[in-house]
Image (cartoon, rainbow, N blue to C red; front, side):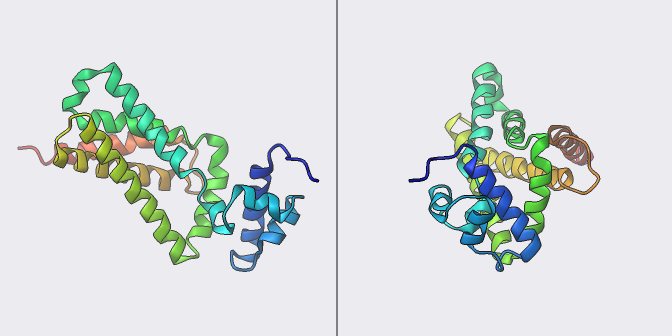
Length: 196
């Protein structure tokens, strides 16, 4: 009987991504992924329901990063109760921790694969919609007015998506938090021009 091997999930992800790039998503089987990782199909299915799941890992962990940072900000600064943008800004900082620099190349490759399949892009949009709904509920649970909570959450997701797209662009060297700060500053600048 084969023993559990350390790093199996990561090996499977790396093998799958390499094969998807080389042969296209549809041209790759689970058996090929497992073989390229030096593992069995059974091991693959311990970690992933199917080969699509390789492209969408850790959604709960992703959302939890935002929520943990929001909770921390809420606990540290009770005055933030009236400022949903401060809470969302803190949540963005927590969400960016899910994407350290060593994950940038993987994220670029993943994005290139997602762009080749409309169904994957739809799923990615659903992931962002789920994040917005989660943040909206979290803000409402912390006493933020429902409309302000929805606006702040949707704004936060837009800032994240805009910054993430810039972060994975070829040639970009700034960190995701640096880009998010710039996007937030530009958003504030746009809003300030609307003031009388």
